[in-house]
Image (cartoon, rainbow, N blue to C red; front, side, top):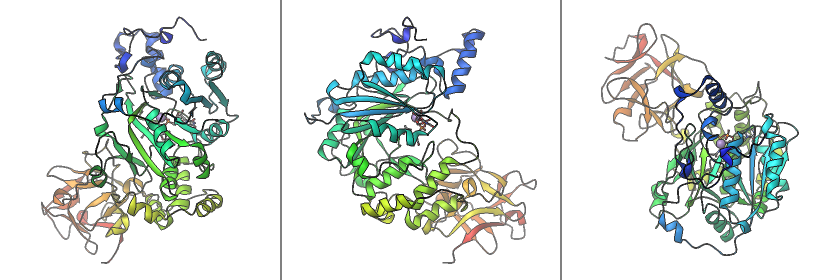
Length: 518
Ligand code: LR7
Ligand code: MN
């Protein structure tokens, strides 16, 4: 199965595809029908271009750190040793091996206790015996732990932690590449204070070309979240930026992305690791983030530490059918950590909580640890977050004539597109809006914006202008302040339009589900 003549096992050949993190561009039109079939299958199984990855050495080189200051930075000479835990479910062979080799080859021997590969019940051939055979060449340094059934990422991580012997645990996704010098800056922070939990800068490995996009420390982002309990990235807030003397200094982060971080093993246990009731994927990153801050620790991103990750646009594997796993995990998280703020999340899912299991053990953990309130967290760690409690009206925004609702996803990919009305579904989600005191119609950081052509969502800028609306709950009139036009709909109910205001036109009558009298 493992063919030693396969060029992916070649080392140090600068002429090979993808070296130095360069892009591998496969021209699909030049492939034979057999190759095309392999290419398509790779895309389907992984949601990234396995065909390109299979052309790149598992030892490929990466660019060197562009921040010169990182090269002269001094770290403690007596750093703790780390176990690196990588959980995977049906990861592509070349991608998994590249993750392992990047750790083995770029972590000083004396700092690497072991690599623990946790196989979350994969069913592809290469994930079975060939993996043990391949890893046996490292004389026990790489351990493989097999789940007896599909546990999901979170319980797989806990099982990995349970057998890990390093003083520090470092988690990585199974499609990562570590840059030279990645581990020392992380371990150094933990050495100084074991209650500091640290993340590397996560560089983007392109899901199509496997190009490694190495970013400068200056552009380091920090983690946040929204009231749909989705993780998101932000630039460093002003109040932190002005305290920083150098771009390479570690920066506080309200949350972590989840996949790549180092934590003192004892501290992780003290914090009660993860909620073992979390299934498959999601929510655990916020649980750990809130817990770290609320229970006395610190969460940081360390700009001199870089690890690449293949970001993809969809999830390639099977999830459980019949349950919305992510939602269930998020509800457990909200119940335990959000105090009364949980209602903001629940409104977004139209209060349809379903059966989320028993969280009493997690609540007990929180009180045993004597953790601070979620309000404290918001006030002190994440004051930038918009809190819906400050809104004038909220819920669906329904057209009286057509019973259609204002409907749009928000976020980078959809911004700048016309909002299309959609039959009201009463599920919250993409039909949940809030009217802020400043007249913004917003969801999280996205605002309904009219600049003369289509009505669309645009990042909120807080300067009124094209994002200021005047809403009258009694008449249902929704007027745009600058243009003085009213929100209406075409007679066929297919599109929104901005028109001259007319009181008796029912297509111009809108109702927010909830309105709070001032
Ligand atoms: O059932 C499963 N069992 C697993 O072992 C499902 C997944 N997995 C493994 C999988 O092989 C992978 O190594 O879990 C890892 C994460 O799954 P991905 O890579 O499909 O998802 P992702 O990269 O979007 O995951 C992000 O969010 C997850 C929420 O649970 C985890 O926190 C991931 O670790 C996290 N990844 C990152 O933080 C990398 C940066 C992405 C961003 C932002
Ligand atoms: Mn991932």
